Image (cartoon, rainbow, N blue to C red):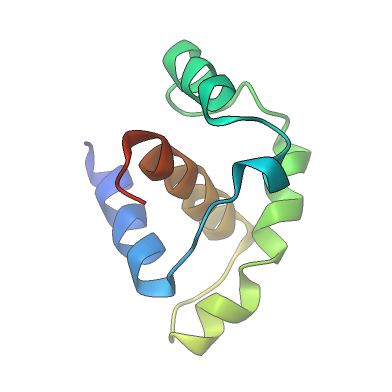
Length: 88
């Protein structure tokens, strides 16, 4: 795990972000394949991550974290990777 992933893994845990694969529209196996083909999950349109990111805004603020679209996207991507690894 690189420093970027470590940072956002801590944020996922601090915020208590939980992933629901059915809500995301893909099953775990599909996410595994996507992560294998691109560990950065850039194979998912950025607009999808942007929309999901907004749902984290209040969670960031309630825990004293600074929210931005980029932080939200990175947090959501790491939450998905963690859930696929079984760390979520």
